[in-house]
Length: 78
Image (cartoon, rainbow, N blue to C red):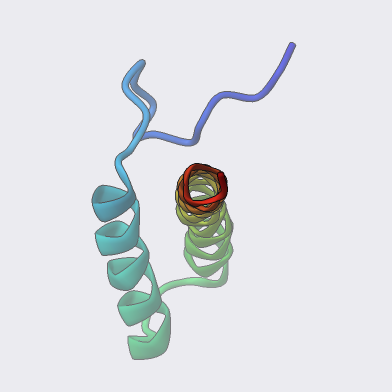
């Protein structure tokens, strides 16, 4: 079974902005310290998932831009 986007255990996948903002909070907590080792590992794992969500959104945006550029270049020829 394929993995779903790592949302907050909901059916709704996170938007880029939601994932980015949560990732910022995860990084802040890890940098601040004070969590137990188990909590820190869980935060790290969550951060990895959030980073992947962000990367997926960015990759999709890049594909759309590349397609738009290719389309515009194709329209210009002729």
